[in-house]
Length: 546
Ligand SMILES: Nc1ncnc2c1ncn2[C@@H]1O[C@H](COP(=O)(O)OP(=O)(O)OP(=O)(O)O)[C@@H](O)[C@H]1O
Ligand SMILES: [Mg+2]
Image (tube, rainbow, N blue to C red):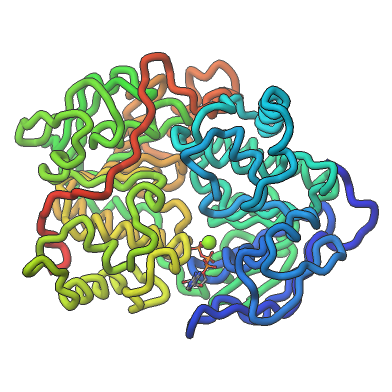
């Protein structure tokens, strides 16, 4: 990393505005980031953070405003200029191409091939290894990106952003929710990387919904609400409470310990897993109770991130999965799992389970087509009414615009729409990987309440999460994975963020255990995760929205 010679701001934004049709995404936003400064940009889902970033990267052209990177005016709407001036991005959707190897993904700059594409295969492979090593990843450069875990994919996107290019040294690093899929050990490593980068004089624009990270890493904070700047202050002038007030206004509802309202644990399992093996699992067994919220914790590679996909049939496995009625679910048959009342929200749900070009309304009804079909065409009105109900229930923003394509919604609002898609089926067993990833602090409370309600209605809710605070807040029971098995089973009063973290790290050879596990290279004999199919869902009624 080459340090800029002077104190020219790494980024200077003035009067930036952007509308999409009638909706205002950004209104007269100013932002200045000094060299070596880590500046957090915060705001609720849909407040304009990603829009700001996409303007900086040249993807969107603003309606008004100016941007300078390291003192140089940025020609707007031009990705190659943004790169040339030294701006680098890790976008919320990562911007990786799944079908091609890590190596080729690293060589793609901001959506265009860099000069590195022309060097010899051997040299580019060495170079890729070095790029990956810089962020502590030991992933094979020849592996296709589609086969990697969400955490490893994030690592590849960060490695690409930090790739050294003597023709265009990095001045500004922009990270849009880079930790959404990262477990705690890997978050720590990312924080170290950011510290190192900023110490070399690079300005960092950091977007996250995990508020603790801001106090760890950011010197200054800008808060957006509905596209407007409501605060730009040093982090040292804030505490957690004040920050939450700035974000959501003063009316945050308590998200914590919502599961206390659920009855004590019953005996009836709604789903039983026996000796599940494959994709980082090695004989995982557990029962999940009806009417309960069970958490799954563990470092990356422990089985935490594959167990629910394997149970559902989205990831290949051996071993037995039994329903409450004693039905044995065949592996790799998500269609049968759904027919028996299972629902699965994958971690990378927008990529795996949504169709971005279809409307929110169509995505919500995808899991359950029958009520809307008549003479082979979709009946618009009931589908619309149901989508509107769910938009209100989950506070999707912008409200009521159910006909907008899913890609027009902010990341967090896309997650809420995916939630609606499954909740409306009233699943008997609802398996969720990283359920509130990318969701703001207020919306998280809304989604947690929906899960508690579903459990109170008798559903077995199983949440796999890298966020131990979330598990501690919502689960009555937490199973901790180590080495592909259920290694600990915390219940009732034993459940706390501390106890979960401790169990996750027990048996680790070193505090760095999570590092090597981010390689995403499956254990011998394990098969890579299959992309969750979204087509060909069996027709099934969605009674939840009646
Ligand atoms: N391509 C688009 N077409 C229409 N509207 C859009 C488009 N992109 C963003 N918007 C709208 O602009 C607003 C800001 O969205 P943006 O993605 O910037 O939010 P965000 O702050 O990044 O939210 P999140 O935390 O959920 O990622 C939202 O109302 C969104 O629906
Ligand atoms: Mg966003």
